[in-house]
Length: 278
Image 1 (cartoon, helix red, strand yellow):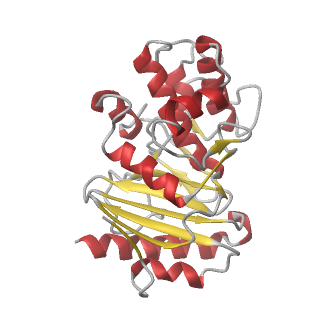
Image 2: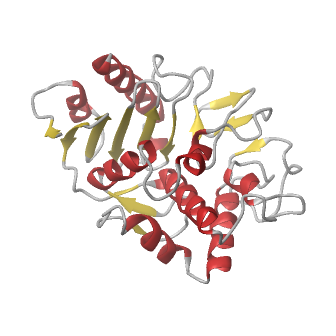
Image 3: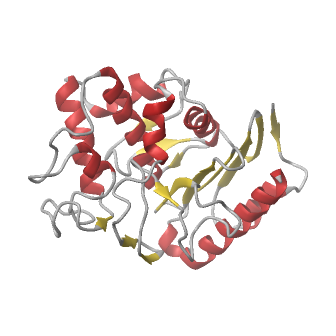
């Protein structure tokens, strides 16, 4: 069931956010509620990493690659790159720490992972994502315009289709899909840019896992199993398997321009969504 939330209920708070455009969706089981122009195109920024990781897992299941393939610096694997454990800096070509020593959030690692899939399949990664993810999920308004770490564009309507796939996978088996929300290298500490330093700092493959981080960009009432991502373009998306619920909220105002307010608004909305399904 899909309904547009025009009645001033839980998602309507996005109308008060200090952004040019905003749209949102709450997915709970088979119930989908949306608010705003859900066909408006937004740059996803780092939510792109989640889609990239899903495409990589499709390549794993196809047998084109393995999570244990050597990728990046000596000793690193595809798994290290997707879990921000390969030692690359944020946007550095070289490593800044040893492999598996610290969780260093890195666009480079995700780009190396995507490049490995492209090399093994012989398909440019933007084309691979389109053929492996966007087309089978009918995400017709989604495109990979530049970096697989931050350069995808999409709509709330298309991301609803994507989170439904994450929650109930059809393109890969549930065992393979579980890797995206299973903590990789659980002992690692690290920093989440714009948020803080955490010990430990749990991540899956391409997704951040909430764990016991405080403060956090999700709600106080989200479970420790919540996973997802936020983006520098003012976007956020999480799935909380404990309540079978996902939240998507996309804007087109850079996070750095309203970071404190964005975090406050995201937490408040998240808690309201959790309350609405309990």
